[in-house]
Length: 189
Image 1 (cartoon, helix red, strand yellow):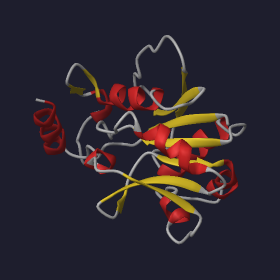
Image 2: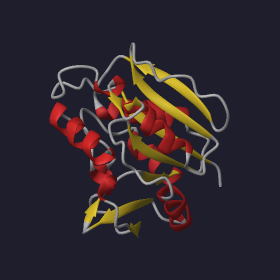
Image 3: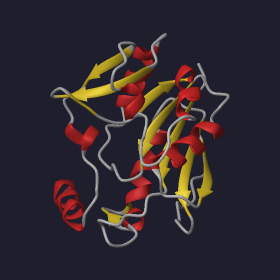
Image 4: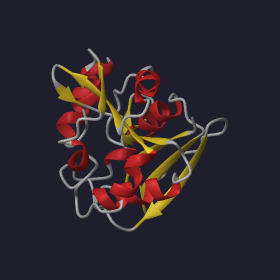
């Protein structure tokens, strides 16, 4: 199975008030933590869908990290651009650039559960989280999304989803405000 990881990093960060993905969290920028989680997945490539001017850093080694720059901050536009670039893959992980606490072993568990399902999704305490692993069957449906809708709209009422139970709340902790960033910094110690 050939898989890709897509890191969505083209948002406008209006609630944060500045470029949150370049803000330091520990010893690296927020976007670096998302890319590191994506590279830990069993993938052949990592595709970062970035806003103009976002420095994603230099990532030598494997898997390769590629950058796609887009002008729109609409979630559907970012997702479509990433899926279009990964169109030859059997599936694609969707990572969000502002989620720095994704457990690095989770992607392998999602891969083992995907099988013939539409998607594999982690769940903690009854809540769905990230990353989401979409099968190639989902790719054509992504093309129909618009505005700020992500894949969640497509996944909501499906019965062919593989759920992976997880005890780590990092699967739904994102950074939207400076207060969220401060909490994450304290969490890292």
